[in-house]
Length: 323
Image 1 (tube, rainbow, N blue to C red):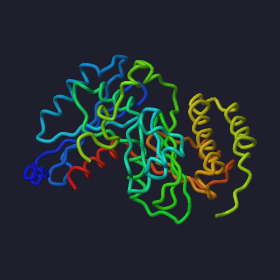
Image 2 (cartoon, helix red, strand yellow):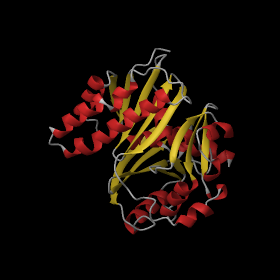
Image 3 (tube, rainbow, N blue to C red):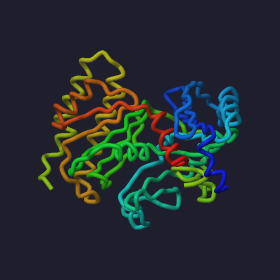
């Protein structure tokens, strides 16, 4: 095995990322040989209502997996039963009101943790049971990877990973994790088809690692303004705007942002210092109206970095496998 690993980089390795965008699966593939990108391509499939992916998608993935000497299939976790917290010990989960018996977790830099429920992991495994998965990545892992690539200031900064169906919010002071939350931006019933008894039967033995399967003090102002005048002004903007997308999705994102700030400031768990900067990793689209509202109503500086989430997921796996 060690010898095969040594020579692996000289063969073609395919990394296949799978992300749900609305009612479609986007399958994005990168082929790497000796550290060089050989090819990349993308294909989309409809999301069906069955407990496994449809036959066309299954056949496509099986062909890719069998065509190359080394293949890695990667899924972006998009379920609600996930989150992040400061600390790695059982006592840290307990003080956050989280029962560790129902979830799997991963320590990040021995400082903070990401977690998800066994039921969400098992559902993902079942959905792709005919093709298999090598990695499951939490959006918190993507944020962490992006954060490590940029220079950070010595102050708390709020980061948002903007995906079509979700927004992941974290607050870091340089590399120190302070707060994390995951929200859906559409209403889904992804887990509703799972029997209640599956929750009872889910165990650690059934779970896979959330990152991979086989390896691996300024004075705070009046925070009540966040859900008072600021939100009301935002709703006024919405009512005068004909965009249903702005009314639906952007109002949710703004509410999730303000609720996260309230929690960070008011909950004694976080000892929240003042946050005046938002950095958006934009994997979908951040509207100009939302940007203006954050800047004008919350008086926060905002920077937007466009990203390709499929590309980022592949790059994380490539680094993990071939580095």
